[in-house]
Image (cartoon, rainbow, N blue to C red):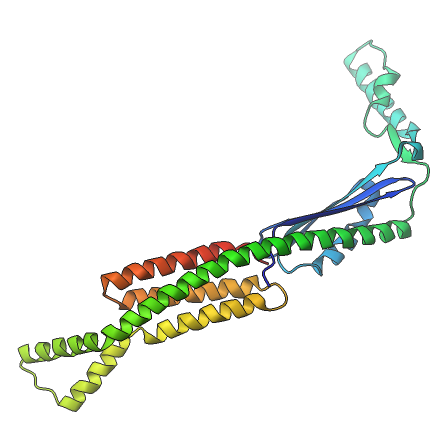
Length: 294
């Protein structure tokens, strides 16, 4: 199955104390990488998010975000007197040390970090938090996976087009090679005979034929053509299997590229070489597409 590593999903729910939102976003990554961003009141749930997310995907960089928006009627302003007093003592000490005479404004102290806070009147407990976070994460993951599968379907369409092009080109190369192989072998044998004759060496006909066959086998591309066809079929088979198989497809694309390089190193025909340029271009386009697959 083609499943993209890129996707986004979110889910929200309203409660008496406000609105909770969980979002998932992901991009390409070679390994499994998880990042969790939570508000202060949910910071204890970071390990919980990591455990849940590890089972949702194989590789990619996934960022999970949770947000809590408090309803105005469920919150109240709380003055942190200890923090305010600490600020006052430090500022007074600095004022005396510097010989400043300016009074300390209480309004200024109230605006300092940690002095005035919005505290919920109807706070949720940890059990309640895990309940709604679990539900929201499941819904966000469903939306996220739907988007990744849709993107994967688009990638599959593009890859299938490139596979069709590779198969078309390899058939053309195979047909041309089948017609040219015997004449090419005869030409090689003739060159060997001429080389031996010019060196004044006489060779036994059976021995000569055996060596010529061994030599010809080194530049015969029949096996590589057959393997390329097998790789293309295997590519489609893996793509139809259940579950994401991006790593296997990436490995198989590398194998196809190696076969193409081997064929290119053996053939001497300019026409076949140009066809192999097109084959290698199609393989490279496939490799670019599957880099985004999980």
